[in-house]
Picture 1 (cartoon, rainbow over the protein chains, first blue to last red):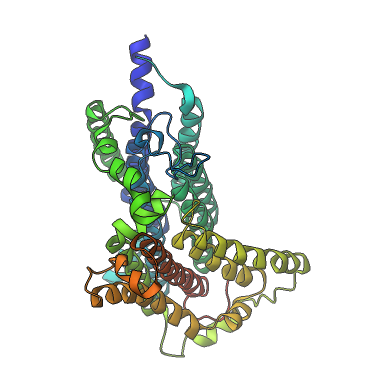
Picture 2: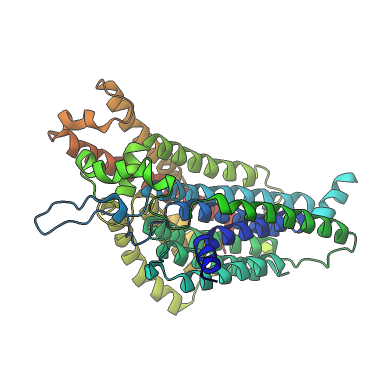
Amino acid sequence: MDELFYFIIAKYNYWAALVLLFIGLFGMIVRNNLMKKIIGMVIFQTAILLFIVSIGVKRGATVPILKFSPDKQPLLDATAYANPLPHVLILTAIVVGVAILGVALALLQKIQRVHGTIEEDEILEDMRK
Amino acid sequence: MTWDTSLLWQFDILILLMMVICAVTALALEGLLSSAIVTGAYSFLICLMWTHMMAVDVAFTEAAVGAAISTVLFLGTAQYINRWIKKERPREQGIKQITLVIAVICAVMMLSATRDLPDWADPDSPASTHLSPGYIEQGYFETATPNVVTAVLADYRSYDTMFEAVVVFAAALVVMVILRRTSHKHRKLLHLRPKREGRDTILRGAAQSIIPVMQIFALYVLFHGHYSPGGGFQGGVIFGASFILLALCYNLKFSMNRFREHAVLWCCAGGVLLYAGIGAVCLGLGWSFLGYGALAGILGVSEVMARSHGILAVEIGVGITVMAVMVSLYNDLASGGDLEDGL
């Protein structure tokens, strides 16, 4: 029983990321409304980001900002701080993510303006005319 | 096998469950506005998750970008489109079920592969023993920056950050190119839309008292990024959000009078130019591109301090670009590119 418990505790974060990944992907494929597809894309993206940040977590570690001893010397023990590298990659990815979202929403507004709808099947019908 | 309880797995599982529920709800809801709001809640939950995973800089960015700006952009678009989804047609069902089966099979395959991943929060995992200890142990002596994330972001991986800023800048331009109309025949439709005068006294009073504090806080976040969570991205987004708040509480005309479109565009380009310019100065002084140590002679400080100042300078560049891009994205998306009337 304990084995199973430790197995779950050691992996649940990856599982959550994967479940979110497939929810996002599923939404992107089956929803007919283009805005729902964009929301699916946002969820897909955050699932990947969640996975990458999960890799950098360390048990018993604190935020990656150096602490100082009273005589102004930094405490340099790598196991005491979370891995900063995934944080850097994800931080910039979030800001690029909002830029992608902006472009996607702009395309959406343009589609609405041209076709008068953002439903995928109606757009296809409109294009065939 | 012992488990350090400092990571509070119960709390994690609760938040992750709520995130999954929010994700499903956001995709399942029919109304555009309601799913935009649920997406905002989803962003807030993932922000909590990141704080808990000790990624404070990431959480800060997510709180400013995901929970605030993205939601406003979604709402602006939803208001522009302003219609409800029709009932989905029955012929969709077949595709849906096949997709569901394929997605579940792929998910099960990937879930079984997680057995080979290192345990979550394992300090001895390959990712945490290879490169990052070097950043943590040497970063302070090479860049005089206690916040390791800032040091890696703007010094060790500054090429990355520069091109991220370029990508954000390009996105603002693309949105503008897509949405601006050159012909004036559509413009007469604009008068049919209800004009918002923004006479709400309480909102205006609140905005008047919050906006200056927000802007000072944004500058603090930007300039204190060496010592605390924060930096160019977060500071820039908060500063941009203050203009968006102004546009929400008054109207778009008002905020665009305060921060004119020409100024926005100059800021978009100027931040990137400042970043690349510092790199070019370093190159001109015989160092590598963005090798801030070159600035030691100009600034009259040691090489280590020069790297610290170089980080600050490029963070300011990133901050200016990000601030202007957020304002530009909002202006275009909330008004459908006409810049006439906002959300």
